[in-house]
Image: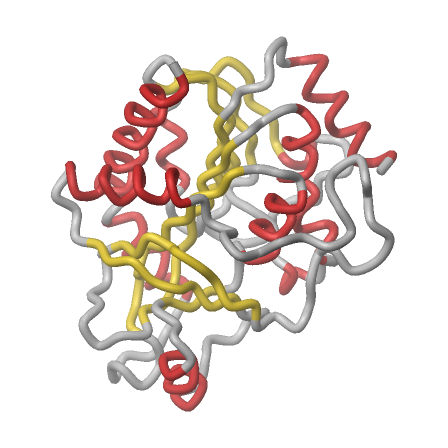
Length: 274
């Protein structure tokens, strides 16, 4: 808890008022940060107890500023357990921001589609998730300053925020679906058999992030919305071998749509907060 408090205090000394809304940006989606009227920018490596990001497509910066008149904080990139980090290290940023006072967070990621109808470059609004990482960031001593020992996960993705996110995509005429995100540990991509399995248990998309952060956010009482950019079909749904370069390329190709959807979301979010 001491490390979290020190991180929170670092931000509090720089930022007068905690923004209500946070965005966590997935692989290749960092350009959304350019939409922000930035007031403060920090590299992960300069923030106490943040681990540096080691994955291409994740700049590893925290931006405080305004978007459509709404105070926001944007994590340009995130941390992953497959980088050799503990789940507690992975969720440290979102926990520190919760202590600072944020209330709502939009988690985004690049993901593989688990349905043949999904095309690279479209989006999936996350309605629920399946934790297949074999781990949980709440294992160990509970931090009562953040939340309870046992956390209800009947609605990990807030219905109202999820509705606003879907409405924003529709308003911008951006192709999307709704579905369940399957979180795996990585860093290997899934086998064809694993993709068939994930589809059979109800998965709509699969990726190597988000789940731990959503659990930690729910533990801290934050409202969450989630959005996957479908960057590729899952293994076995196409004959193309998967590479991180291709994932980044597709994500970067649709960044304009991605940014437009999140700007529209912020406009609609502003209406329910004022």
